[in-house]
Image 1 (cartoon, rainbow, N blue to C red):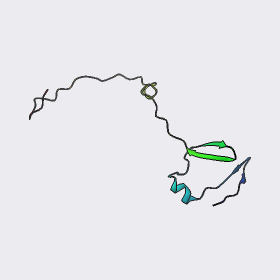
Image 2 (cartoon, rainbow, N blue to C red):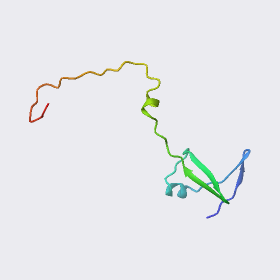
Image 3 (spheres, helix red, strand yellow):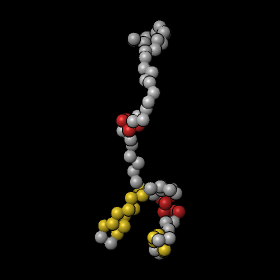
Image 4 (tube, rainbow, N blue to C red):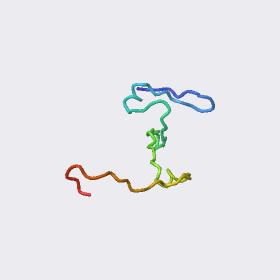
Length: 80
């Protein structure tokens, strides 16, 4: 398959056929990394980086509501 580089605003672009996007499981608005190697451009879907627990809670201002809970007496062969 071939494509033509076309002007797109102040940049240039290549349209990627829908069946190729489906083959690599990419959808509209996915973020991709573009690298050059020799005379090749390599497109790779950007991997979503998971935030650390510190990053997830950096703006947390509330209280921690940690306490023990009494589940009552065992009703079978549970070991407490």
